[in-house]
Length: 155
Image 1: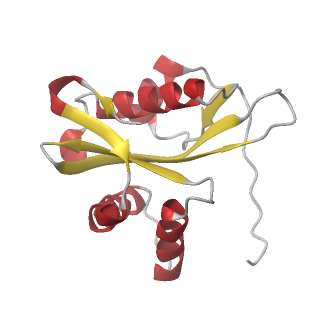
Image 2: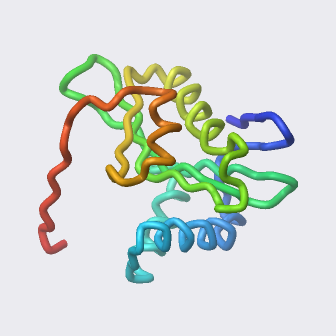
């Protein structure tokens, strides 16, 4: 599935040749959240993205042939609805491209994919302090009031 947005923005599935561009954007994403990950985690994530048997998928936003953003997502079954959910795990737009509709186009792209695949819902999370992104997200959905809990299991 390939999507086109205004101003020459193209959104498409990632291919093996996108690894370098994705790693550059991924580094920017991690820096934005002031996080570091072991190389083994990043390498595993890339391998899962390319594995056609794994549900993790990556969409790349391109402008003039350069990667400017991505969404990392997957679908999964739900105990709450009779169709799968689409989970937007990570979204990132390069700082130079923010405010130009790239983030909006990336989310709209996943909404279209979810509808085409018969998903019941799309959902994602962000930090409370990420007010700029939350203004964008509020255009698509309202917060459902849930608070996330996460416990490390040592794996």
